[in-house]
Length: 75
Image (cartoon, rainbow, N blue to C red):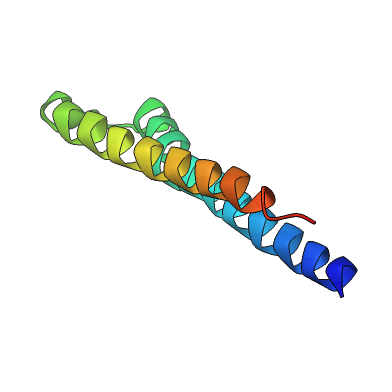
């Protein structure tokens, strides 16, 4: 029974870690790439990018730490 429990725990932790990677990609890297490769640049949107990036990074860190915390349940 503990083997099944361990595999389910690892599956959940991996899902949360993948979600944290997706948050980082979608919320930080994609807007940076869009700003770098955009034909029109808007300096006035910079604070919006910064606030959004900080929120997405925070979300990614929380998900990653949650995944690490869940791994402590391994038997």
